[in-house]
Image (cartoon, rainbow, N blue to C red; front, side, top):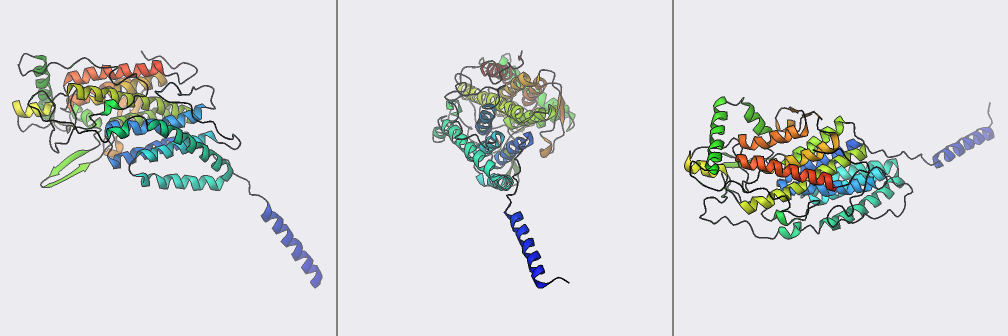
Length: 455
């Protein structure tokens, strides 16, 4: 039988072992960031933009800056990619880290992406919980790596934000609304059902990212306004009406209706039921193409660097496409088909899609789709087929495309099927967008090994 002293000694030894074990430092778990983390961050900001109802031009800006910040951090340690400093207008090199010890560049890039995204939306509170949950997780896994990486990511975010603040966006918020008081029948007028003011009439003052100026890719003018039945303008107006009538006669199963609805991408559709008016909210055209970039990156098995390269190049092409397109919209200031068809052909006629509140020429979908398709083609090649499920959350089935250019062509013609654009706006807009995309491809030297040539 153990004596009291022996028991005490054993118990003491046991306490000593426990004490030493407790004092041992818990091994820190490395923080691993994947491409899916960036897909999630981009998707989160898309959802907030839908909630906040950002216009298509505004949404393009919100995508571009966070992507640039993340890309710059990642490319700084990857010898296959070049910095965008001195390639984008007024953009200077990001700060170098104060220390590289315990610095996780992919983590820093994600921190910068989330932080800038949060600054650019209205509903910051919808991004903050997501950010804070990640911060808590990372801090638990490896507090040293988390702190060093977060500090650097936020420093880069501040640098990009300072550059962002010089793009004239804040100044355009206080500029006059677009005046529509005119007796000129060729000029744009607000359209039903909400008769909203023209959106972003000063967007051509926003500093471009890659193109030299908003007017660099000015398209050919639209056909001269004329209600003479032999004029090109009248023929295009009549074509919109005839196509709409033909499509409607086929019923809801018409392929043209499916195409129009798939590419609608109107962030704010007014719905009137009796005395009640409300809105349905969806993604913008740029968001649809960012969704396609995600699909392509996933299908290609892209890693973090490749994923952010794809997002960044595509978003820059989209952002400059909107600046260029909006420059023409408020220059030509052309009346929408709905206004003239109601006045001259059928006062009860409604387009298949709701007419958005800004001038007709050129088609924004056509310009943006052309530019995005060229950027994506330069990365993945012209024969990259994919299934587009971007519109599934909005109750629309998937569509299959043999290439990005195939998708862009369908997006462009969807506006004619939808009854909201004339053919010239669709065709010339697509050409304008392709030219912008090709210019972005030729001008930006993002990869050390030259990207695939986009013909």
